[in-house]
Image 1: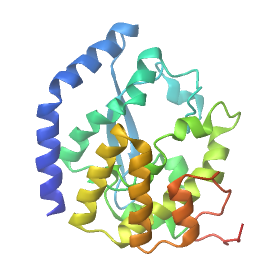
Image 2: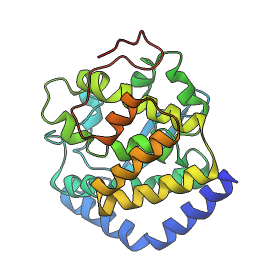
Image 3: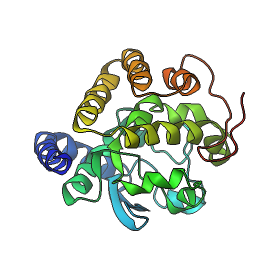
Length: 239
């Protein structure tokens, strides 16, 4: 049933958003006359690799700098790319990956191998399902670029205050996965585009409903600073 939903929604999405896809393609190309698409190797279900497609929001060859995390102030982001990233338009192209079966509509966000190599044994369970376009963590950390800001070491900051909570939220979805949960997450993702504060209130309710502990629920609500914390499966210390 999940795969049937993926096929139906991704195909409809590609058709319905085709005018937007064409407009974004042209806007990126006209800026620097390079390919409007960025094809990246990401970790697939089972630990293999697949080629993920997205609209290019950064300068050509930005991935060769060796930095995997991107702050909002990252100079590699183009002016067109800032607009594309702000409205998550760069992710629309991934509907093609969903249609092909590389990804699902709902699932942990695809990771680069360097990040997946840091996974604990517990986090490696994230590779047991198809990566997705959205999940709880995608909504909670839709402002990831702002969190990382102009950090001198965005990868380190990501691993200290974002990855621990992202992984916990993603594992929560895997442990409680159902078609009903997928539909709720798709609806919350759409709501977050209109009103992120409203979406986060519902996210907090959903996280508690799914059985998350109080600390994870508080971090998901995003009403207080994110705590530095060990990733799932590591020695967990009380803050």
